[in-house]
Length: 438
Image (cartoon, one colour):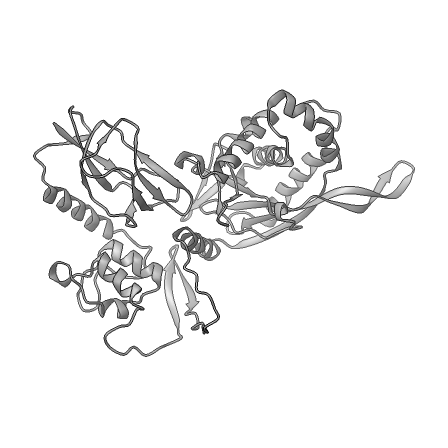
């Protein structure tokens, strides 16, 4: 008999933690190979973690709603066979807990993304989980020090801080309310922020708790604006030929391929081609270094039923023909709407496209999806009067046009590159052959 450690898998390039939403198996339950044992949620995707072995669950190391770091052991499965990934059967529960605590202490020395220090001015110790909850809920060190801890050596546990939050956050000694400018170090630079003024609430107002996904998205968006120097370029594109071509072939396309042809895969192809021509758009920034990505993996922002957004990724988009691109776009959209995206579906993106026109917007100024350096917004396709140049002179006619807007990180992408990139997309789309096959 041996014991196997079930670890929280990596779920994306920028995903460092996940919330355990529910256990599908309990202690004493038998599990098969690849059988799901727990449901998890991140700011990007909800997913299930399958078992890598057959056996019996002997221990669950985290409760539901716990926040767990990628790579942490979350459960122990007793197996019938011995292999390199198992731990010795003589290991006790206390040994496992001690090992987890040792790993946490090592991780604490490199954690820099929290405003709550490991040790308070008074010398009290706070675990990474407690500090992360405090940071997420906006609890200051002054408040944290006044929470009565029930853990070993009077440490504040997860249960203590959650009870404090649920109880209305009333502390034991008066705290003078302040609105002040505080210094925070983000991405190795100082950013000045103002503490938000209190919001007045009357009896008719409804208070809605933000979802964990919503909180993390909000955090990432603010962090992106603070990290990248956002600049936007806009260009108008005549897509009349594409509109007429799609109208002509859509029924034939569906009959042959079993897929509906929309504008999105056509636009994605044009973006992939432009990236190939301007590879310095397909980069990431790591401190003072630029990482030039070899693969062109296009993120495709998709709306979820709950109103949040998710960005599934089309891998090696430059290698796909129109049929392949259509199948990828439609397949990921269906999986996103039905909540069936896997962790692999949302990781590895190098450039992102968002379709703000799907909601009727003419154009938008999207926020860069870190650690990428640019994002493209597709505006609504509209019929507009336009000047048509012919050999016989200029005429006014009805054309199908749209705006595309390009947000890019001015630290590494200058206006010339940003402008040439979307101009290349415009020229590619306007050169569409109305008589082309598919």
